[in-house]
Amino acid sequence: MAAGKSAVGRNLAKRLGRRFVDLDRAIEKSAGMKVRQIFEQKGERYFRELEKETLARVLNKQGQVIATGGGVVLDNDNLARLRAQSLVVGLNASIETLLKRVGNGTTRPLLQGADRRERIEAMLQARAERYAQAEITIDTTDLTLDQVVDRILEAAQGAE
Image (cartoon, rainbow, N blue to C red):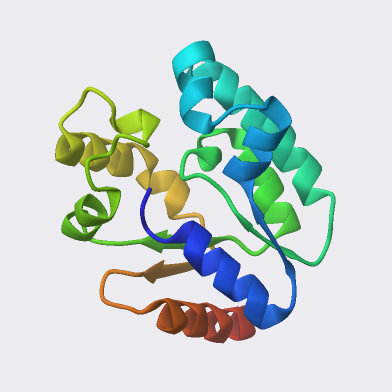
């Protein structure tokens, strides 16, 4: 959350001349409502089911850069699909940077009604093992968008 997935993904896709897919936007289009509304009206479990279906559908296409939500890897099938069908790039940043980037957190369903720092720290800790399975990990804390994209491209060349 707030590590830069959508912005980096969009710029990476542009540099590669590929289609960009923001998984959350694809879910919203499919559901006809915003992610925040899905969480509020149907709950996280329902959202995760939509996320899983949408990811499977999106991964069937080639030549694209996909930005997923940070929780997508919590599902074993999702993580296995991503690792089998794509190059998984993880983005992270310091807690201070994430707090600045999320602002008041009102558009972030998983930060509602909680101490933002505490909630972010707990999510990162709970997801650490999953995030560690990315083939490439980039800390975006002190990097510009272009620097992050450059590092991904350099690391991807080395991963081939």
